[in-house]
Amino acid sequence: MPDPIHAPAGMPASGKLLTITIPTYNRATYVEKLLNSLQWEFDRMDRGTVEQVEIITANNNSTDQTSLVLERIKKELSNLEVITQPRNVGPYENMLSCMAQAKGRWIWLHGDDDISVPLGFAALLRILQKDEADYVILYDKNFKRPFSGEFRGSIREFVRFCSEKEPYLLLEHSLITSNVFKKELLDPQEMRRWNDTDYGHLYSLMRGALEVNARVCVPEFDVFHVPEERPPFECWPKNIDESWCDYLRWLSEKSGVEIDTNRAMEYTRSRLKSELRHPLRFVRKNYLNLFRPGAYPFLFKRLMTLFYKKN
Image 1 (spheres, helix red, strand yellow):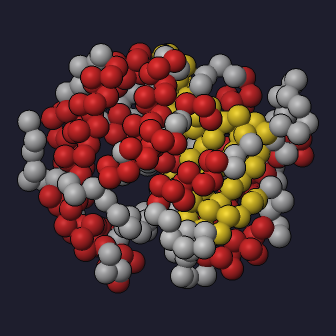
Image 2 (image 1 turned 120 degrees about the vertical axis):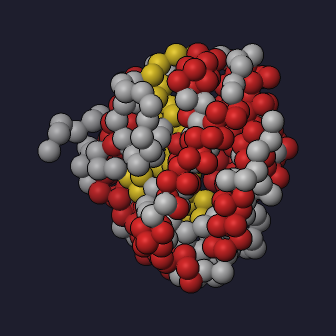
């Protein structure tokens, strides 16, 4: 077992280094797996470090067993706080309710169906403790990066690096779990402005980061992965390509970096085409979703990306 990490020097005992915010809705099985994976990480840390981390889960008035799962795990996970919404307030307001109560200097937006990679969380905390960045961007372990090693630089340098290396890198971290940031970078009102895009968190984060030319770190190690049996999203933009293109155009304008949106779109189309070349493997990977009515509109919109092209 590796040496335990320790709380950062000079931080008040009552302070929090990190708040992990987990908005959830009808994901009892998935959120249970996530919290168990975090518990595994905490069990391998010293007590001082564990006390610097809090977890806030917002249950968006789920109709499944989510509330029972959270209450049970709360008895075992001492740094877990559960918010229960009296009604379904929508994904963004549920997400913002977590962040509004966060005591951590850093916030890690975390999807309720993503899983920690063993010891990845401990390595992430070491980066946060050093205070050498303002924004840490993580990529899904299953995503094949077009670069190796660690990236460090300003937010504009990061955008330029991605635009030259592979523009799709700027879309791959649209996953909420990909974003760990200092709390002041995200403006809730700015996030609400982009509610219809499904990327409000990214618009707000990037605007805040660009305003202060935030220091960015992309670690070379893996921290989380998306499970293969991931359920479809409850909502999605009218057209995925259009929403992504709009975001990249906005980012190009705000950062002053030229971004090839068509190149980014061709990358995501090629990934989908590759999956569809193996129908049996595609069905095996997504078989649980075949019994979910919400999966079919989602799949249809994903298939639209093969034919929709916006110049």
